[in-house]
Image (cartoon, rainbow, N blue to C red; front, side, top):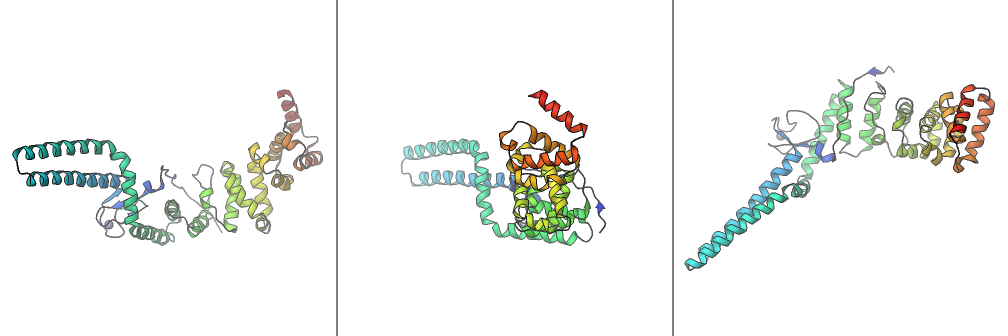
Length: 318
Ligand SMILES: [Zn+2]
């Protein structure tokens, strides 16, 4: 299968996932995508949920002030003397003003609470909106795979589903991936083993090794036999070990895993591992990994000047 070169838009990051949502002012349909016209009612009147939260807060505060004024008026109506009227009116107005001052201070801290309440009330609309988003992404897939991927990636920030992840993975596998792309790995990890994901991890290990972190390593360790059952499984695992030797921490955490694939590393990766293992570290010095590294060194690199330089320079540093 031929892979296509694409230009993937960088991923927009927000503090909270819900901040990616917009809501239609007209029909209260939600969307996590960037369309102009509402998929539900066709009008173009989306506003960000943050703005909506502020509006809701202001509206509920306005209601509170109206109640305070209403109570004041009721007091005035039931008063029998002029003195009572003056006291009711005066204290009512002062209290309403105070309420208004307090509310002004609280607007920003109150907004998240209002939003939470509102989300609870609108839960079904939110689910329906995201379902429309998913349908739109699946619908566009035949014509524009890149756009479909970007849409699914956006939906994936709010919809926790392995099906969505599998669709993203299968699209990514059709693209020529490059180091300069804003690629993701941890958000695509599945619970079960999947060959497409395994291939993708292998590709990431080669082009963007810094994305291989703890969670990915745990997935790989959980499914190591399944990786090995693939035709190129051993190469994928060797690429992953090649990626983790960037960090001494990972080698120290997973010495046995590193040992199993050390002899399949290309020279530059093995040199990196060699330097980590031969540096003074009580955890690694007498480990099986150290023995394995020494064996590989003796068999393949004993006469290689690069290795001698490294031994000398680490020796000088000490
Ligand atoms: Zn609408």
